[in-house]
Length: 210
Image (tube, rainbow, N blue to C red; front, side, top):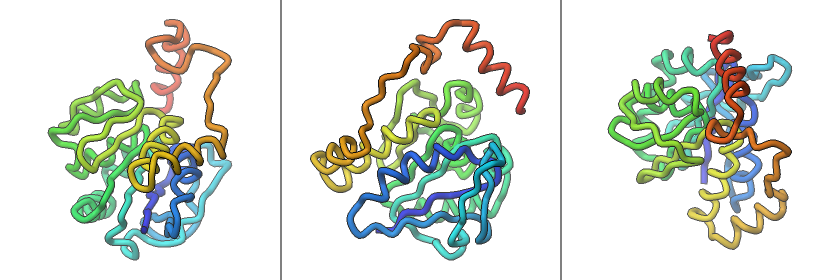
């Protein structure tokens, strides 16, 4: 099974590393980090880079496609070589997936039109503009398309996909092996539970990055 994880400048590292940690456990998997060209691609912090071992042209038909989000999503969504590759690859994928604002890039490729999908809570309006219907869920599956909410939700999506692709027992084994048992110190992980001033701080942070 071939998995292609798309990298682009200013992606968010956990968006792809979370699912990678889970999906790389599929037996006999061939997981590739891909980008417009081979080489190191820097994440949004500029402190971490991941090597793209293949160009997108070298991986035209992956079985699983994974698109992370990040501040570079607008530029990636506006890059015709990326959107054309996504649209073509989607024709033959077994699963097409995204994490966080990676769904906006899928949307720019025309993949989410008319579908329920999710993304980071602060990007619902941007997602709707692609023709998708935003859903406030941790992850959303519609057919072979699975979109995950913000950043850490990619781990949840990855575990679900393991259950579908291998078995529920295998997925639970990996969940236990990586000790994925979230117990955050604050009830601030969702706009529904976070204090209003905390939500405002996040919105201001994203506005400053725009």
